[in-house]
Length: 455
Image (cartoon, rainbow, N blue to C red; front, side, top):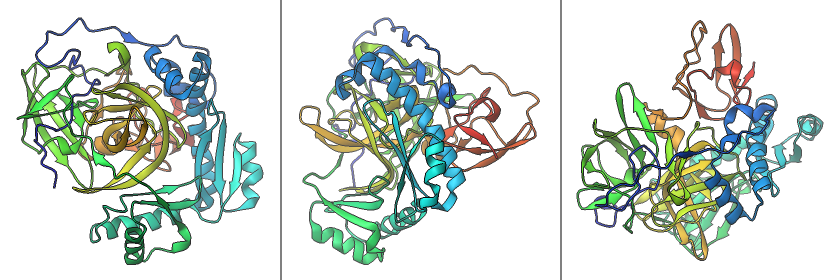
């Protein structure tokens, strides 16, 4: 079991919550940089309401550096990814049990592929602006198989077969293993249908990125960790972070050693999530600290598709970008298995733990662990933010205006976390959710075609 409060806990996030984490511990904070926002281009189509056109210049610069893009390609990629997510959501709703996953590809994410188990769906998929791939297994079957592995991991040692996930691009549940015999033990014990599974040999075991490397921090006893995203609940405010940073009741101090707050809830392993309530001396803001100390605004929490670009802010290595590889990944750390993580190609190093992941202007999650480094490259896993908000009853602090939805009766509610396929009523009409997100005031279903479809 991980000792959460070792001096090597997570280093401070260069991100989030208006906690002015702009200087090393003990230093006098510099004047807070103004939030960076890209000039809003003319945007049309389903992705217009996802803030893909509001990416900060620092994020675009990091995408250019890490993905080898021009400025125009970086902007086009974010717009394409936002619109692809909505198209994929509509196709998921129409295909039902035949749906087998979706992903984007190409330098600017210009190609959306949607998989189906029925070849007769090909024409409808192409008509919706996507490429069709006919596969053997539906997404539901793969998710059921992965759930069996998740349940068995609680009873079988999996540190030598540390990662498994549903991979829509190969239409399999992929098990990464350091020692093939360890994967065989897990698969045999779970009783999973072997036709659904592929195994991949890997050399490195993920570890929780909890080593202290200095930088902007919040402190837990003798340890330090990174702030994730600012959150509110009623009149209370604070931030989310990695669960392996502390236990409920643990007191925290800020980067400047001023009393900050305390952990209200924490989970690790199984999940890797926690939230800290801050006192009145701290203010929650909708910012992640970006490259060069610039503030990057957070506009929401719409989940990015597999293949989409994503950027991470961390105190050890700063801003780095990559792509989303898989959602709902299970990772078996030495301390225990954590389920429901998102796997990315973004590099990270010890001290980046707890740092925030952003795709466009949308919050994605906080760093849990990984392997490799930012010299040779690596793989990291983040705890998605939407399950954290749902688990703890929190609302993400965003740049969205606090506009009410007066006169719009129904079951839809601002602040609620919705999953793809969820159905609500709003202003006399029924809608189905296209992409996982937390609903925001003033952005009801009728005004959010990228997130909701009339049922």
